[in-house]
Image 1 (cartoon, rainbow, N blue to C red):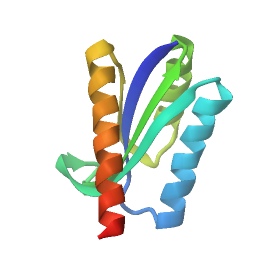
Image 2: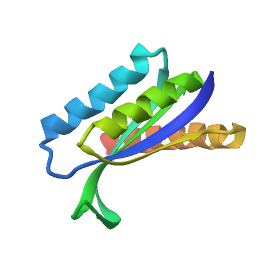
Image 3: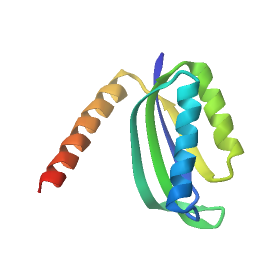
Length: 118
């Protein structure tokens, strides 16, 4: 099993419910293929570096997961077939990237906890 990280951008014209439904669809694609999702982050609506399909913003979503290499081909095929996806990028993480991601997860977890208490 390899570690992967995928970021995809959903079109900004979706409602909140439609966006969550699309994210659940791709999470299901991964878990049904035997992948284990380690981390999921919703980065929200962000400005794009350049217009894509005449849109200047998009909903960013990140998944960090472990899976067999065959799962990636299926996931990316699903991304290409879904018209709600503007862009996607899947990267195989090497050991230093995995360590950094673990530190980042702990840092994000601590920041979230301290914000709730404040």
